[in-house]
Image (tube, rainbow, N blue to C red; front, side, top):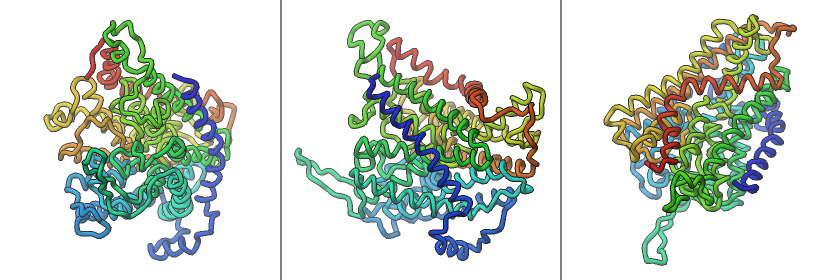
Length: 571
């Protein structure tokens, strides 16, 4: 570990803190309808879609609208991918995507997961990249923020279960948030050297006389929304490790900030809407503490490196560290600290973009991204999904606090009773149930084991990581697992759908239930949600719930692999 490495983490943290309030203010104006500079376009969309922007939807209608929109757009993407070979903007004449992979990809991009079991440059045409994958990068991100905004409205209002209009939230988020932010960020990426063109692939002769194919395409624009929307699906197979996507350390910093910028701003949005700005900052602090713990642990583990490499013929146990750290799977232009930080940010935020290969991390370095996802996609989290996941944990935390003092739990004046806790428990249990069940099936069936490129605990870690990622709608992977099979394409496709909608609908139900509650004035017995004590309780509840759920599985994977590595065994 070096001072430079810690300085990179510190600079990133300071910038994130500085931009949280301005972005939060902007989000308030987006979703309260204050912006009108694209009003003609907005009205045209409402007219074409038959949408009444003044129609406030009950949470059941809101959820139904969200599911219908997502289902139809998923089906359209599946059809386009299957017919890709017959459609224009395909200079490489790439064939249609096979059925199982088209299903997985359509489900993955619809759910903001962007899990890719293919190489983008050899599988997807420009048309598929731009009209389907990029569309979902915008739409799925806007859907996630809409769900979070609806939940915050439910907390802040007394509206008989009405939490806004899904289509209005979708349109406003796309027009005023993701499109303008993406244009600015794409121009910055182009300035740094990311490519943006429609050229056919370049076939160049190397100095050795071989022929090398250099993929081209509209990369910078895809990269911008990929990070801002916490989507993560790369134009190239190497994702943000590819120099055409992420050419410099400055572009790398911009990408990390883009991943966190909207989730961080939503914490300020929460505080403003519930008229408790200190509560928004308390939630931000809880997210930041979990992020900092993960970043520090990953950097420590990767900087120490592999003791087997450091030993070089001497006693393995006696050689504690590798002075050069673990550079396997990392780009030299980024280094250990920036790669560990990027891995932490992208798995905290359910983004899934990578600038290094997580499969090549040390066992503890690889455990950090896995645990980040298993925490519940809430350490800043995906755009929108991170906030509503954190609010679910907040409701659980104040419920526990109420039980400890013998009072009916309250959250910003709203009583927390049995039906709220039921939907909270459904939300929490869905993720653990799907991850552990699907991982267990994959470890015992021949079709699941056939995809492994590693044995022992590392092979198990690859399976556990893949389902933790797909159900968390993250999309990153331990790349040693071969996922291009009917078994894994199908399992991952369903995992992404469960992880998105079986958790989003309970969050919207919670919004509706809270919107039906009257706001009671605070009393001396009300548990404050604006103090360091609240932040500490919230972090403790998150860590305890995760540890009780996933520690046995983690002990069979990265934890035992860590001890075996120090005993001289690798997998």
